[in-house]
Amino acid sequence: MKNTAGGEFRQPGFWETIREAFLGVRRMLDCIQVEVTSHCPGRCSYCPHTTRRDQWLARDMDMGTFERLWPLMRKASRVHLQGWGEPLLHSGFFDMAALARKAGCAVSTTTCGLCMNGDIARKLADSGIDIVAFSLAGTDATSNAARHGVDFDRVYEAIGLLQAVRRSVMAVHLEIHFAYLMLASDIEAVRGLPSLAHRLGVHAAVVSTLDYIAEPGFEAEAFMPHEAGKLARAAAVLGEAEAEAKRLGVDFHWSLPRPDASGTRCRENVARSLYVAADGSVAPCVYLNVPIDCLYPDRRVFGNVNETEPLEIWESAAFRSFRDGLPSGDADPACRMCPKRFMI
Image (tube, rainbow, N blue to C red; front, side, top):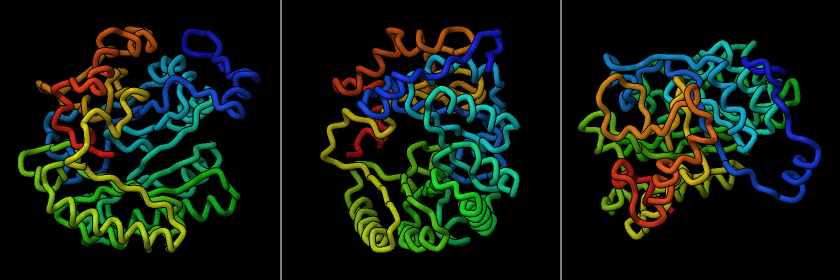
């Protein structure tokens, strides 16, 4: 396989593979998150794609831009193909997945499920992708209502279809996950997550909370370290759901902000990961590079792979200073109020 400049994409060699697989030699990066597209068919109430729709920059990453990530992918354990949009809308999605696999990376994605059909399900099963996560904000049509335009029954059917195809071709490498957003207004809905996962054969459920406040007023749906009562109620429900998931054989992962946390860590793992938007711009995480056409004081972009070699961006003094600030207790102002800093 050649890149757009005519050069070869050289796969990991035999000894490199041995060192990684059997000697535990760790690559420099744990994950590169890549925004395949910022187009999305959903109109989720809490998402800037909805609240800032007049300023939204809907764009697809071209293959040439993705190919420029090759030096980074060769140093990353995983490539996660999803950003602010629906990745399965992109016609080149499976070519991107194949190139990331060629670089020796595990590949995963998160989808709303609306694009799922028999052909896409078979391609996912055949692609070598090891995790397909389906996003939810509830466990039935009523509790999932905040995801306008993403009908719960349609997502349910999409998961069932992928599961049926996965089993028919014995794609044992592929796991189906839930990426569940727990909103503070409906904590109780998460109780239904273990049984829903068990019913659909979903391997794992990962529960997150609202970290990006798209519009004033949505703060009430988030969980902050000082909200002791709200956090205690959520932790009690999540603990019971975790116990039920264990009983049913479903992996269940959750985390909440803690008032006693040091604030010197980040659940986004910014010391060993990065985010590349559809236009090639590089940021520490998805929350610091929202595709809106306006002044955005919390945007933190350290370069663009179409203009600068990606490893140079990662190793630049500015990006290094950003990463070093968090563990030293001098987090960038854009990160100081982020609840992910207070999750243990």
